[in-house]
Structure formats: C-alpha cells, structure tokens
Image 1 (tube, one colour):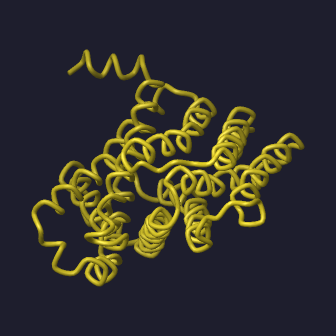
Image 2 (image 1 turned 90 degrees about the horizontal axis):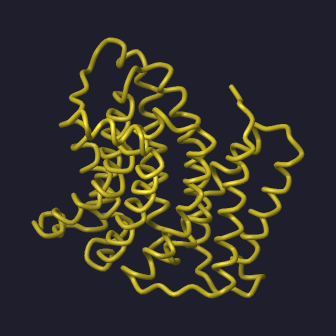
Image 3 (image 1 turned 180 degrees about the vertical axis):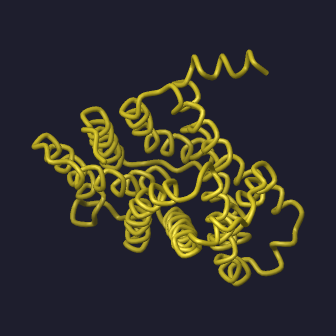
Amino acid sequence: MNRISAYASSHPTLLVLLAIASTPIGAAFSKSLFLEVGSGGMVFLRVGFAALSLFIICRPKWTDKIQQHTKILISFGAVLALMNFCFYAAIERIPLGIAVAIEFIGPLGLATLKSRRWLDILWVILAAGGLLLLAPIGGETLDPWGIFFALMAACFWAMYIMLSVQVGQSVSGIEGLCWAMAIGAVMLIPVGILSAGSALLQPRLLAIGFAVAILSSLIPYSLEMIALRSLPLNVFGILMSLEPMCAAIAGLVVLGEKLTLQSIIAIILVSIAAAGTSRFRAVVS
C-alpha cells in the first residue's frame, strides 16, 4: 500500500491524465443509454450512485457543524444537480466533445473575472472565437437547445467552483461534497422517475449507471485529490484543458460521433484558452 501511495505521489501528472480520460468515457457510456432511460434518468443514476459510493467510503456524520451550514450545503447540492442535469441535457442533443468545450467556458470565465491582467483578454478572445465557430452564424448546424444547456452547465460549473470554496471553508474534509451529492441526488429523484420510470429497476441499467458514476465521479475526484497534493495548481489547470479533446475522442470511439473541422478548431481554441488561463494564472484569494 505504501508503494502504491509513493508511486501516486511521484506521478501526479499520470493521475490527472487518468482522471481526464475517465470522465468523458463515463459520459460517453451514459449517453449510449439515453434511449432507454433518457438524460434525466441517467443523471439521476450517476449522481445517486456517486452519493451512495461517497457515503460508503467516507461515512459522513450529521454533526452540529453540518447542521449549522445546511443552507449552503443545500445550495451546493442544488447547483451540483443542475450542473449535471444541464450537461446531460446538452450531450443528448450535441456531440460530447463540443458540450465539454462549451462547459469549460464556466471556469475559464470565472478565472478571467478574478484576474486583472491584460493577457487574459487573449484567452477570452480565443474562447469567444471557439463559441462563434460553434454558433449557427458560423455555419454549424448544432441543436440550439444543446448549446443552451451546455452554456447553462458552464454557468452552474462556475457557481459550483465558488460554492465548493465556501463549503470547504465551512466543513472539513470531503464531508461537504458527500452531503451536497446526497442532497443533489434527492432533488433529482422526480427527474429520474419521470424520465426513466420502471426502467430504473432493471439490474442491467442499474449496473451500468453504477459504472458511469464510478467513472465520471468517484475515480476522477479521488485521482485529482491525490494529484493536487504534489501538483502545482497551474499545472493541474493546464492538464485539465485537455478534457475537451479527450471528450471528442471518447465520443468518436464509444459513440461514433464525428466532428467537422470547424468544430475541432473550436474545441482546440477553447482548450488553448483554458490552458493559457491556468498557465499564467495569478494567485487570487
């Protein structure tokens, strides 16, 4: 066990790359089930099983301190649920790689707003150029609702980042995420039932939903937490900028989604903007 921990600590970049690969693969497999359970059913299975797994591993307790911060935990859980719901609604309508690229606008925009450096204008221009290439005015024929939901997921991702900082300052360890995930899962119960109905009781779909939760939530969260112990935050951000391209590859391999050259250029522009924002990020409080 000590050897595994030592290896993980000395190879944080590999852990982040594995996390980046795991997330879109999980999303791609989840999309393959939309015809059976719908995007609402799938997002409920993902968040529900992720919450269950975290509870089994971390065993959080409903302490007085947790009760004092119930309101922010409910807000955190609601944002987490909405972020996942909008992302799944997006990939139901547009290719996975494009949805992930658009979603990255959220943290990218948040980082830019917190910075006062002129260089960040370049990253905004690159990201905006990528979005314009994906817009109907740029010649693409993407579903407008898919783009809308991806943009909403981006907004909720930015809110998720801000709330995660607040929760982390209020609740120690990973307990805040455990309770927020559980709250989000409860909020998604009506969505899951309306979307999937009795299909949620099928053992095969439950097994795949559990696998998606592990691939999309538990594995990447765990690997990223371990990697961040020894990996500089700006390097972590640069590596994470590879996720849109990984998502495009996962969409191609798992789902057979083929992108136009215009879409590929748009994804690359957003990835460069995300990498640039992380590489030259100033330390902000």
